[in-house]
Image (cartoon, rainbow, N blue to C red):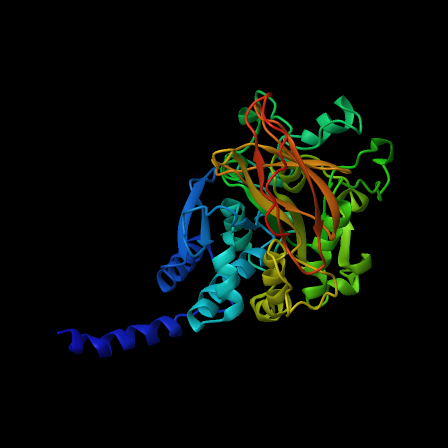
Length: 445
Ligand SMILES: [Zn+2]
């Protein structure tokens, strides 16, 4: 019997190949089918899950790639891509479907680069954060589209203006030196956000994401925080004021990784506008309140940038293949930003994959969740995840890093993030105020 089945299995494989994703726009049902098809083609390295439902009840699906889908492995960073937050900005949605199929096919082909990526990173891909808005835009189609039709969710709300405003708290209640990390949410926040926003906030609160991008259209530029201008006196001007985060140089490098790996973003002149190196601080372009990327930075450990990928928000299908070819390397290279080692395929001469990661543990080697990792000179702390592991993206340099947790003695180490080597900095925190002052354990660099 088994022998008789073999030709049939071969025929099924051929059918799967024949059903490969083509360069067309995917309505909701088609998008869902495409995600589950990738899951069935690469069952051992993928998982599909939903983080909740839209106003009209559509699932907000995520496709996860990992060598252990569904499981966080200590010291393995979590990465995410979010597309189609504005329902009428559809290129990101199609690019993320293409990327999903590409990762699966490359993995099946035995590609060393993608296999390594899936082994040392857990990748979460959400092609559409606003499936309701997309259906409104898609009904009109690419050609007759109104500029804003389908941008908002089904309640008419712009999801990238719907996150709790943590910037104002930081800018005005604590002055510039106030806290700019893990800012608490206002008490009534749940009643003030849309279902899609609520689902995303709960999602990013339950995974310890390290790096992220959200994909838009209407311009071609890699935009990094802050989006909200600090100086509101200039709000009536078209150009507002550059408002950097404490991680400004790192964010510039992350944005350049995308723009220089992209077919033409780095050239700067696109869609009648100019951005040097194809990147911009959000606030210096135009100030935006309650956006998602600032929220990621101020509420979680995640560094998010916003990618504007096409002048035409709803490009015709004949453009999709060219767009995929222009973005493919950039989409992969950006994921690799959080990983150790050099990227041989990168066109950027900058060193990439830099930072430190490690375990914070007690003297019995039990991981400590929620420990605070501070880097001297950069007033933006990160915290350890449930298993005590932490990730801190940093440019090359020498840093003094302190780990602290309630009930433990803080520990400080000095570490060098080299141009081509990762640093693994693990810290054991002696218990209680009377603990000994022995040197912390430091492994590798
Ligand atoms: Zn947008």
